[in-house]
Length: 486
Image 1 (spheres, one colour):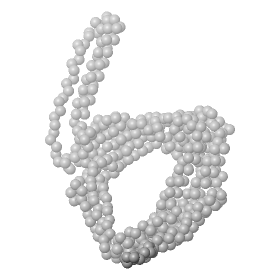
Image 2: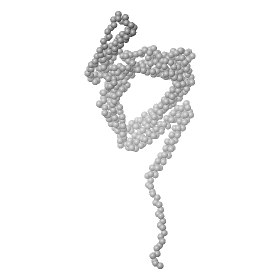
Image 3: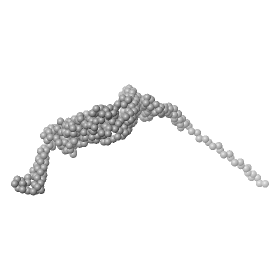
Image 4: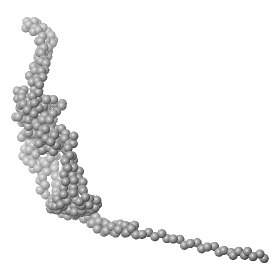
């Protein structure tokens, strides 16, 4: 059930807040301008660096053998990334040799608060805000403090059976043929797989006991359930050694197979019996689950997922530095090194990097322009707030302020981008300045003419309308009638 909260903000408070927003707007304008300027410089420097790297790299034909002639060269080579290091998670007692990384990710099943607000202006300048709070259970990356929930019915509803930190560790020695990868390149490997768990049974029992204590502290003592005990299957009658020795090889193979199968069944039954008491901790595949029923989570349950990075074929583009690699440094100071999964050519890597540079350039441009527009709205927003005593008029005026701020924001952004590009691409800068000037002209002159036209139309509609009267038709001449008889 939804919980609502209503707050009222007075006219004076709203006006005061709007004037405070002017300072925030100027700070935001400076920050957005700096972002736009920096982004253009970054984009051009990165493009020039990639162009330089693309024209200077050499192929490494055989990474499995060191080549002294490649020392200090930007190379592109493909090989298997492998390691002999052993990684282990001390908290859970699991590990493996020959993996590049071991990671654990923790999730908690919690009540989560969601809010949605709607504001309404009232005559006189007040603002009434109604906030609706709803709640749902979901997996989250960290425990949620339910004591801060707005709805008293959901306060203090959250708890966790245990707390576990996310963790990851990487091998220090990862080979790339006859070379070694540096830390940055190692962390770029993404051949992730689930890490199957084999946690020590004694440790699982400790986890189970601690989890049961936490569970019963919150939910209360649960009735114990008895589970049927599996009975080991009786072993087949043993064959006397004297008889066994006289049997043919095929008969011996059959008897050995039966004995091995029986031992396997009994071992499985024994293992199942050893784990029958684990009611609050479950391991399956690469997941360790704290809770009674993994398929039906309750608030407080915890899910720990283990993953590993396995050896894989990778392509490296970096500068050879002895038996390892270092970033390529362009003439403009920009650095570049990369590792991609699978086999790629140098041209493919450079092209992908150029596409990524272009994508991020446009993303940051859009973000910067939106921030500039928001800054102008903060600066001029007080004008609309002053008119909030009559909401209808304020909304109309606010719409106009929004249009003006949007135009100012776009023009300002184009000017900043153009000035930044003047240092690098003068032709494009001139085009951008021309576009900005055209927008200013349209807004300043054409907009003024349009307003005059609208005003003239409005005046014409208000003037009294006169209907012209058509002149009367002249009367036809009449012939006098003589009633005198001749």
